[in-house]
Length: 553
Image (cartoon, rainbow, N blue to C red; front, top):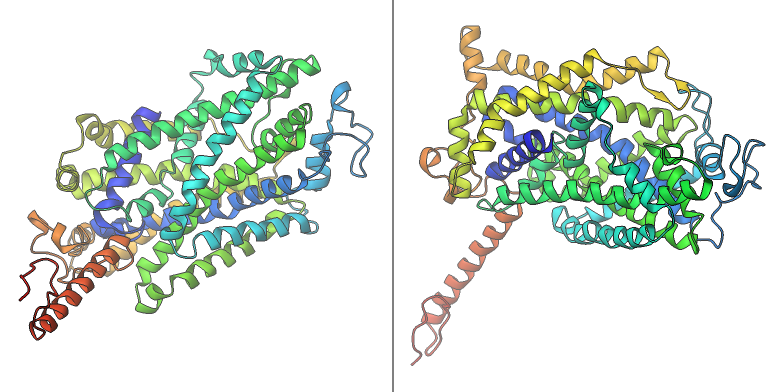
């Protein structure tokens, strides 16, 4: 899945954004009728940004609660514990201290998705902290977030390595690693497994979110994004595998300590990060230290993703409106998006919040991601034309896309995505949370969220056809898919070949991009040196020019 879908689509989105220096909406000048794909990406990023920051805020909460001599989920003598709670050392009943801490104290979970109950004020406070941190790191756009990402992207590896070294030295760690590496071959023909694999690849790499296009739009035009796509994709996959060793070495130790099989302590989703692993950490000496490191790592990893999601939305809004005020006051746009994101996340901090979070996670960003990616491939390869795009990439990178990627873009990736999509729909199973079965009305809301991003594509296509020039439907259709005159590289110096006579005369086509800002500064410096030259001509012995010095008298 990584080789035939993940890496090719990652490279496609990077090259797409870098070539035009535009966000997920502006790039669809390549074929204006498909701009709905960009709106779909914005919807997906909005959904993910809302609930993803709630996960980060819970990690913040656990981080703060780890600043103690004794982790609060270690014993059963707390007000929130039930008679079914037993200590980690003598686990003979159904629930553990960490599970009851998660369900009864952190979430104070209600009996169903429709029973919201009160807002959990500690979680709400951490959500506010999380959004404030994200806003402050993006206050100057990619210029500020880029510096922060150096830390958020590298320090987790330090923490992972510390936890890995500690984990593999524990008794029973090998059994956990064996469980992690042992394949279940009987599930190889299960379409749900392949669907989950596709969702994981799309989710971990960020394909179809719009974030890859947005971040690539800030690259220099001739940046080798092919190299970047290979390195980032492989590193991302390798990091996931490495993190698995870290997690399952600790779980193996926990299973050995309890005298049970690893499968009985292994969990998935929120249960792994906020129940199973924290429970295992209580068995270690100086457990608060290990807990602090673990949740600090989760916070950093989450913030890195959240930066990209918020920047995607902000860039799309600014590129689309494009007024001078919006461009000069991008900080206010960032603040506005952050405030809206915080307000929309408040319902997820109620007692029913976990139900809604899992509903959004399962429906808002799974089915829609593969649909958006498939349509993007079809638009670029078959509507705009694969030959045109291959020439664009060659003009940008200095070499055409490798044959393998050309084949994947045209045939393999769309086919695999379509195949998985069909069988995932056929083998669909409603979402559950532990023993709770979601009611039908909530599943309808889930499907509505999934379709809300996809439906943008046909709706905008019909709108574009309706407003396009032409006396017949076919003429309107042909004009709506034709590339916009502005389509192409942002800078005039890069508009060569068939782009040489098209596009606006102004050099600063995309005034938001850092490259254009740098070029503007260079122009200003050039004007200043020219003025110095003029002044120098009137002063004997002066030499104002730095490019063409003349000997002084």
